[in-house]
Length: 110
Image (tube, rainbow, N blue to C red):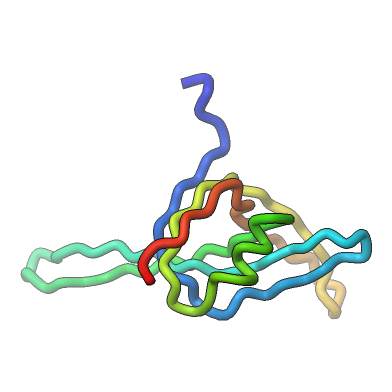
């Protein structure tokens, strides 16, 4: 168990068009949202779906792949790590963000 650290694996669908940013130093950053669904049947026999949304970021070549091949609705499998950061918004309020930094990406479906 000592080799299992900060690792996340998800399969889901992209919620909106990727946001691509090229930073001052020339590095490329891609941001996407990914929806994952959990299906269950309650005690009354009714089917339900819980959808969770995840904020993902990718750098470099992975950002290139996202820019070229990923669009809204695309099914993806990703592996990455959780990363948290904080920033001040335009009103001076401190905000906290948890994102998944993609280390591996697999394009699924068509």
